Length: 95
Image (tube, rainbow, N blue to C red; front, side):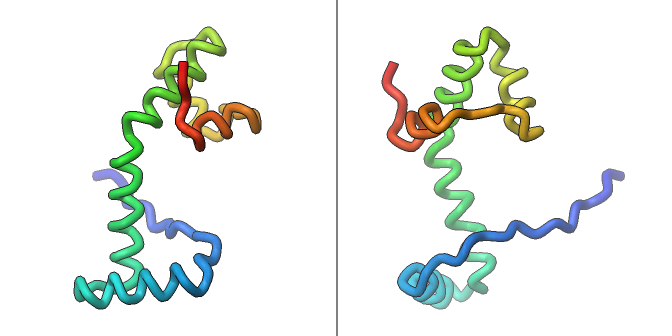
């Protein structure tokens, strides 16, 4: 059986407005703030799935490597993404 990782994600402070919004959202759904934060993060990541896949393909093509190899590099922290490339992703890339 695979060993379960017990590593918690650490986030930068949300700021007063978003922290209050998270607390209210959690209370309305009868969840802890941690559970609600995880749920919201997962929902946002799912929403951006197509855009993320498009960007990984773009980066792989630009570097002349396979999409799979680009995923591996990014997961291992070896992707070396430039500020310009990061900006393209934040804005939604147009090819």
